[in-house]
Length: 322
Image (cartoon, rainbow, N blue to C red; front, side, top):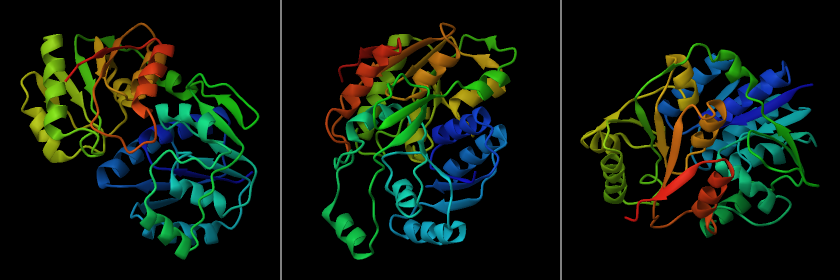
C-alpha cells in the first residue's frame, strides 16, 4: 500500500511518527508544508527522532503553495491512502481533492480535532473566509471540499460515528523512549502565538505572563511556540522571573531528550497540556490559565470550548481576569 502524508506542524509530525510506528507503515511519501526556517528545523528534528523520511518540503506562500502541490500530485499520480495533518487546512484538503482514494486518515492537530465531528460532512467553515480568497480559488479552479468520511488517529477521547472511525494513538514510540526521567523543581510556561494571530495585543499578553509569574512566585522557563515573533520573545525574556529558551523539539520530545520532568507545567490553550498529562500522568502538576481574548479568527466560541474540553482530561484552569 502506498500512502501520502502532508504535515504542517510538529504535533502533526508527532502523530504521524506514532501512526507509522503503530501500523508499521513502510511505503509512504511525506510532504512538509512550513512557514519559516524555525518551524522546518523543528519538524526535521522530530523526523530524526521518529526515523521518518521527508519526500518534499514546501514553504507556505498563500496561493503559490498550491502550484507546488499540483506539481507533486502530478509526480505521485496515485496513492492508496492519504494522511492529513490538519482536517481544517485548505492545502491539506487540496491534496485530497486531487487524488482519488477512500482511505483517508486525519491526524491530531491539537484541541481543534474536537471540532471535527461538528464540521465533517457539512458546508460549515471553522475559519472566516474572505471574498477575495474565494474569488481567487474560483478563478484558478482550486477545489477545497473536505472529506465526508475519515479515520481519525488521535490521543483524545472522541467517539466514532457514521462519518468518523476513531483509531486510538497509543503513543507507543514515545513511551518506548522514556528512560530514567529525573524530577526537577523547574516550572515551564508553554507560550502561544496569540499576539501573532491578533487574538491578543502584545501588552495584554505580557500582562498575563507577568501575573502568572507573580501568582506562582517562582522562576519560570518560557517554552515558546514556533510561530512567536523573535521581538516579542525578547520582551518576554525581560520580565523578571522568566527565561525564554529556544528549543528545536516539541515539548514532549524536549523532556524525553533532556531526561527530566518539571514540577509544574503552565499553559493557556495548548494541546501539549493534554499530551503531557497523558504521558506523565500525576507526575507533573499541570495547570491552564484562562485569558480574555480580544478576538478570534475562528468561528463561534472556539477558545471557550477548549477550556471546557480540558476539564474532561483532568486539567484545571484558573481565570486571570485581565
